[in-house]
Amino acid sequence: MATLRRFYVQNIEKETILTGDEFSHAKNVLRLTEGDEIVLLDGSGKEYDALIRRVGKNEMQCSVLGERLSDKECRTRVRLMIGALKGDKTELVVQKATELGVSEIGVFVSRFCSAYMNENKMERLRKVAREAAKQCLRATVPTVEYYNGFEEALASCKDYKNKLFACEFANASDISLSDIEGSCALVIGSEGGFSEEEFSLARANGFAGITLGKRILRAETAAIAMTAAVMFVLGEWQ
Image (tube, rainbow, N blue to C red; front, side, top):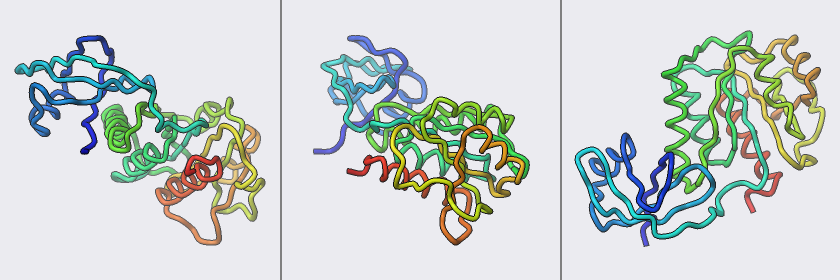
């Protein structure tokens, strides 16, 4: 049986109206019509089975048939902080991090960061997260936030049990990834990496330095690989 198509809406009621981009995708791309079954999502962690009752010019009326709690979400909160990357590399990181199950994503500017962000780019990243969440059958979408200051970005991770800072010039890891348990905040730099001062600031904010092996990884590779490694250690691949 083919997987039912999934659509995000802000509010789900017994009779829910699909509009905007989700409606356009359902009607014009997927060619869905009256009588087709779909799954509606509101970001709460629940999935709502629904039936398309009517397709209009600008909206689609759907009747909710039932609901259930999704079993695709991670048991442990993981927050990924990534320095803004050039081109579409930040989009790649957001997409893969969403597939791997992170709950929150932060994009920040640091000393050696040469990329820039604006509201249009941030909205694009949020759309990438929504589409990735649907593709991997998640019922929630990670929040995607922007931090113009590095210290503010670090402070946003204060409530996490484990705070890990990937540093390319660290001689050894302060802790072993295999020993972590509980919520995790991961910080990865941009293409330019971090300065010694930024590393010291991170340690002052409770972050442990982590090395990612003997080779220098591209920023997007490091972000995806570290997220995958942490998810494995936390038991999310079982």
